[in-house]
Length: 298
Image 1 (cartoon, rainbow, N blue to C red):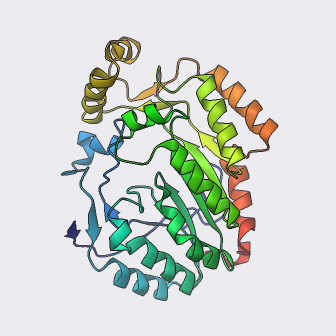
Image 2 (cartoon, rainbow, N blue to C red; image 1 turned 90 degrees about the vertical axis):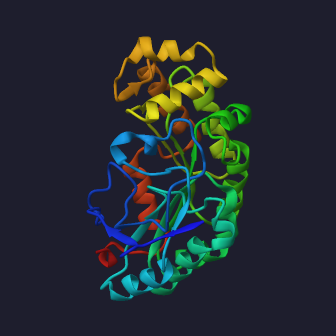
C-alpha cells in the first residue's frame, strides 16, 4: 500500500446541527485513505471529471493519525465526524494498517462523535471503541447495500463481502448497543429496482437490528464510469447495456422507471416495520443517541 502526502485529515463542512434534512448530520468529513478496492461496477469515482489515477488502488494518508491528533486537539468543541464518504475506512488494508481503529481511539479520547458508512463487516472489530465513543457522543454505522441476493451482490460489488455478511455485522453492532441502519445506494435500473428486492432488504435490516433505511431510486453515470459499467453489463448480463442505452442515452441521472411505485411500497414497509426512512428522522435519532446535547455542537 502506497502512502500519500496529506496536510490535513478533517474537512469542516456546514452541517452544524440545523441543516439536518438532506444527509447524515456531521461537522467534519474524515478520509484516512484514498481509493477503494471494492470494485463496484457502478462506482462514480471512475468518472473522468475526478481525474483520479488508479481509483481502485487503496493509498493511506501519510502521518494520518499524527495529523488527526493535532487537529482534534485544536478544536474548541467536539463535533460529529463522518467516515466513508470518499473512501471506505474498512477497506482490506485496514485489517493490518489500523488507521481507522487508531482514528476511533482518538475521537473517543477527544469526545467526538462518529458516523460510519461502510460495505465491510470488518467494522465489527471496533465495537469496543464505538461503545466508548457513544458514552459521550453519538456513534452510528450505516451499511451500504444494493441487493438481498448474494450472488448478484458479488457481481456488482466483487471486491467486498456479500450482503448477508454485512447484515450479520449489523446484528453484532446492534447487540452491542450501536445504532445501525442501511443505505440502499444505488438502486440499479433493471437489476435491483424490483419491489421484492427493496422490501426484502427492509425486512433483513429490521431482523438484524437496523433502525433506519435510506435510499434513492436510481443511479448516476458519467464519462468513465459509464463505459466501465457497460462493460460489466456485457460480462454478466448480456443484452442489458442496450436496454440502458435506449432508456437513458448519455444522461447523468438514471431514475428507475418505476420510482414512484417503489417509493410508495418502500415507505409503507418502513412504516410497518418501524424503520426511520428520512434523514430528518434519522438525524434526530442520532443526536439523541449518545448524550451529545445540541448546546455542545459547533
